[in-house]
Length: 637
Image 1: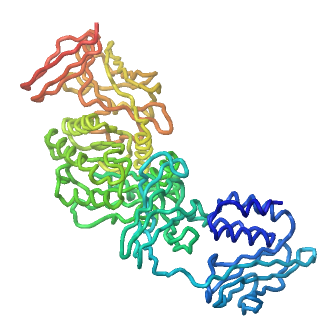
Image 2: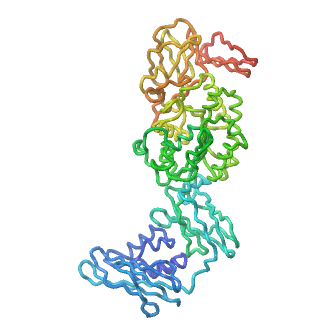
Image 3: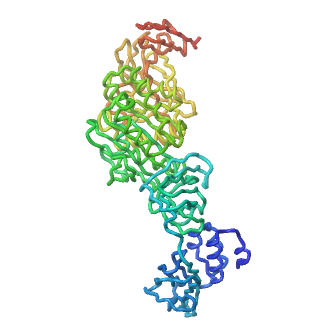
């Protein structure tokens, strides 16, 4: 049995102290009621075990917790299993109060005068033993003026970006939720949080600020990041009464993005495959707000409002659903996916002042902040033969604009960039130019570059549902700083056998799926040679030609552009890491397997400075065209 005097002496809000004292006097602890008044649920449960014990009892609850003169109230009676309820009565200052209802619920109206309201219930337990219970509730003279303030309800299904990744009530950081408030007079404001599923108080009352007369925006700081959603309640006093939030929201991480149609298909489905058929379960705390526009700039495919992904909703794309499923688990917090895309755009279409730039910024401003940004743009620039320097400058201009529209975190976000993934169109030179430009830009900006050639397509450009799911699993690894794909670094030749050495910096080994003979290209003076087989062992890729070309220099390409028509579906060169192997990084200049066993990298024209690097014996380097300097570095013998 609990020590009632010691419990009553604990420091706690007056309304909670009075309720606890009343329940202990009645000999029955109501866990839900104490939790609603701010007591930690676990403590309330422990008190219930000590005071309630194992005896069969009748439990009485009265709501609302703050009852004022003339106010309506509801009585709920719980009897032991197998027991029966006989009577329910209420009196105020000795005068009976009329009750209506049946079963275990009664309703009534409190008297106008303040004072104790006593509820009595009688019945029997399963053995016929008589039971009686009483509950006393204090009727207060009058409620606080409803004109203290009125809170506006928050947007439905909203995820808010946390300001920090650590700390907070649950160890995953915390952030701010702005709430519109209209006050009739200056007043302090308190907040509390209730779990959206159980209704339990997950953070008791704390003062979040003061408001003056009129309309204002109250920044409710200290909202903890966590899994699950919650209701935000406000009050003028720590003990209430509370204005309850009615729309569940969450504090967590927002992943933002932008680009062209491939990014649009991250939000909505392209081709067959439902979420269920792909084994994707959308978490209750994963939401998306993506605006996707058609190529003609005539209509929205998705409107950019917050929503939960579903096969029967507007957000049906497998990428978004998979990234939400994976990242909520990986980060331990709710996750939102936010952004803007339009099909058939070039990087220059997102120039400052353009409609596409403004729409992207509008989505980011609406989100309020983000901790990661994914940019996929370059396919149209490839097919349009945009000069690489022009494309790179336009892309950097877009990315440089992002911190000003990241109100919560500024420049503190993870950047991931890609020109495109699998693509069976575009010429080799244009494709490599745009991809190289984004790769250089990611290095310059401290971002992560991705060129994933294992993404299944529905056409020559756009990912299928299965392809989107695979891309999401790759992006997850990049978000978690686990993107170190195999990088081809040198090639040597011995007869018809070519060995390509790859850098696998984190200890993984090469692994092949299918027969990837069309995922490599070997050229002699620009003419492709026939490949008999491709094998992998450790960090080496072995390419066997159908015939020995003799003592000649050969150019080697891993995942050459344009991609083969069966790209990703039947043949992949990747590593053996989990959960999905990282595809090898394509080389944008040929690896040269030299006659006599040497190895070097080729140089393609250009008017700037070129660098030729040899990882073996360098023989007869040459550069054709270009007015710049050539630097030769020899790491071989």
